[in-house]
Image (cartoon, rainbow, N blue to C red; front, side, top):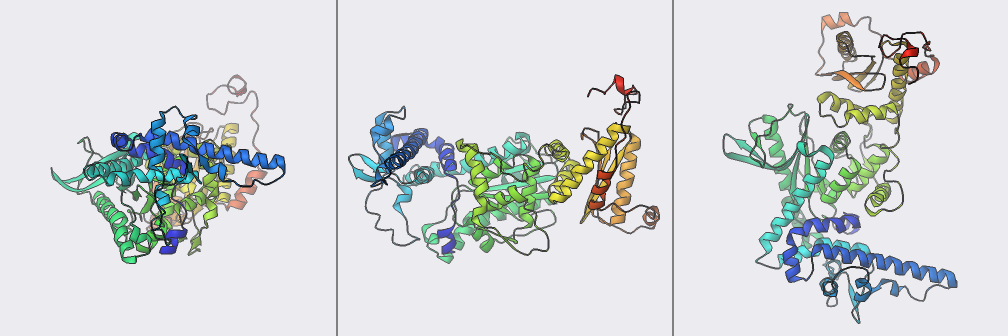
Length: 587
């Protein structure tokens, strides 16, 4: 494990360190000002100014070398910084700037750094003093990482303040995770500090964050433990001990809570002492284990050391740090999109080899993480994450470019399929969730077939005012799409009857029927989800049921059929009963 720890990629983008540091240490500002001479907000401002100054100096040196036609004799001046230069860029007292530089300037010769597993003083204090109050800063990433990590170690060195610092660190992890999940699911679906009670007062276990969205739940357990120095050196025993304290214990608690929810033997009580009622019996529970800091080779260690269970309703755990959760909720910012990814990731826990979860997320944004059953293992290389890197920089650092990688979020933009997904992705009903999840796991060809089918049936219904439909099937189930001018009991009965017959014929576990109007707005639907059982009555009822058309034949048929043109004096296809020329002819 020593090599993955040393060679593994960084856990966070530099702007995440920069921005999250303020949120992490806001409650510790009194201690920082009293003991270090600056607040965390002031530290962020100074660090940003220094990074901008470094970029400007390097750009100027490059421009001068280009004009002269001679390479610069030295690039060192680009990395030199003086307090007066910084003061000219920030509206802060000079004593705050001097205090900041003193706090992050390395003292001594870093002699203890002898091997890859040893502590490197430059990580904690990235400024190198060169005399005359000047310092060297070689990487902007270094100061932002130190800004996020170092204050905690300073405070832990204060014996009297240590308990407060530890509490603030834990509070940050839970508060940040809850805020990011609220960004996706909305505050009414996210609960913090949920107690599971047996009887009136017996607390069986506690959930740090619970997300309830229809019949899907997310149980989040947050931890704030770091990998020790001895573990970083490759000590297997210490690695296992650290992992057990940071990840395994968090998972065990989350699984216990999920199991108690499934059993139904405990009441869920929120931090406001109000009981939380689940709208539906849980169909799936996802477990998120979140750590607050950079945990080297987290994906490798999880695959190697984590002992977990998976049941029909409790999925395998998704272990992450706050930085991945931040990126997940930024890029997949609808409940349906995030749940779909969590489902794909849980189903492929043992079939994906990677060094960091950013890689899997970036792959999903490009290609969809759905992996065909014939593949036993997929290796994802680190360079796949470049698309995510660029998109996050555009969103958080205002870098020119596209905020969304070309892929699953853009490929069907403007299509009827995308319009349908937009209308169901915020709906917690079982029908909308199952329909959305089924659509999001389809291949690109299947999605294009469905989009063409939606175009065809809506166009036909607009033209003749009659209902039209098509069906797509796959492994384990299928979807029937009906288009009706107006919802009616007759249409509901027809859709429900057809779906029951089709599900039986295909011997499927699940079948979905959805009725849409000609603008692809959902009207009503049918969700059948149960084990297939042989029935003489159903055998007789399905003897003349025609087989669904293959996608290729269906596409050919749609291309060849012509749509009846509505005449000016024909009844309007909207169903109003008026003539077309006096109703929707101009629409």
